[in-house]
Image (cartoon, protein in one colour):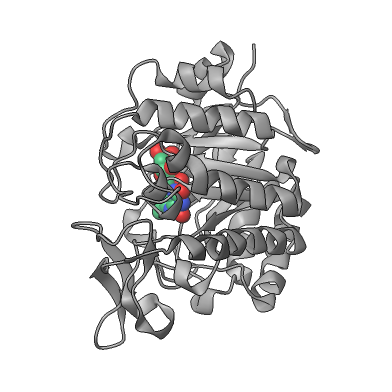
Length: 367
Ligand SMILES: Cc1cc2nc3c(=O)[nH]c(=O)nc-3n(C[C@H](O)[C@H](O)[C@H](O)COP(=O)(O)O)c2cc1C
C-alpha cells in the first residue's frame, strides 16, 4: 500500500517521497529579491520530496505583501539560482508558486500608487494587504478598491504569468505552481460571487469563469511544457471575501477535467477548513479525483495518519504540509520516526531575520 515515504514520478522527476512542503509566504525578501538565508531555509527543508516556494510575485502590480520575492526581473532570476541549487543539492525538487494577488493589494504597493487590478471593481470587504502606512513603515492596510481589467488587457496579465514561468526555469526551478487559490487573482475570476463581469471571462457560465485560469495554464504550458506546470486550487474556499455561487462544484469539476486533458504536473488542493472556512462538501474530493487523472496533492491540516490513509485509498498522490514545516525543518524525518513535532510560532511567520526562520533545530541536533 502506498504511503508518504514512497517515491513518485512527476513528469521527468523522480521524487524521493510524497511529502510536499506547501507554499508559505515568509516576507523576508527585501526589494523582492531572494536571499542567501532563503537558500538555507529551503535546503534545510529538502527532506520533502517536493518543495513549493512561497508565493512569488509575477509583476510589480501582482504584489500584495511587502518583501515577497518576485520573478519578473533578471536580478530576481539570478538571486533565485542559489536557492534552487541548494535544494537540488539535497535531492529534492522545487517548484515556485507564481502569484498575482489581484484586488488583495493596496495602492501603496502599486506602481504609481494606482488601483490594483481584478476581475471586478469591488473591493474585498474586511480584508487586508501588507503594504505601507502613511509614515512609510510596513503594516496591515485595508485592501484597496480595485479596477476591473478591460477585456483587452487580460492577455497582458496572462503573459506576465508565462514570462514568470519562463524565468522560473531559467532560475533553475523544476516548474511552477500557478496560484489559483485563496482568493487571489485567478480565483477572483473563478469565484462567481466575486466575478461580476459580462465579457467572455464573466460569471454567466462555467466556461467563462474558468477561462482566465486555463489561459494562464496554457500560456505557461506553451513556454515550459505541461510536465513543469502545476496549479493550486481551493475549491469552496472562502478566504478573502469569496462567496458561494450557483454551479460552484461544476466550475471546479470542469476545471479538473480541463487540467486532466492538458496533463499538467499536478493539482494542489488546499482544504481551507483547517483555517476556519467551511469544509469541501462530502464526496467532493472523490468527484474531483474522478475528473482529474494526474498527480493530486492535498494540503490543510494533514498529518502522517491522515495522509497515509488517503494515499492508501488512492484518493490523493501526495500530501502537503504547511505550518509544521516552519518550525520542523526535518518534518519528514520526524513523521517517519514518530519523533515529536514542534509547534509553529505564528508571530515569526512574516518578516524578520534568521531567528525563528533558519534556527529551528532538527530532532537529531536537539537530541
Ligand atoms: C505562514 C504561512 C504562509 C502561507 N503562505 C501561503 C502562500 O504564499 N501561498 C499559498 O498558497 N498558501 C500559503 N499558506 C497556506 C499553506 O500553504 C497551507 O496550505 C496551509 O498552512 C494549510 O496547511 P497546514 O495545515 O499544513 O499548515 C501559508 C500558510 C502559512 C502558515
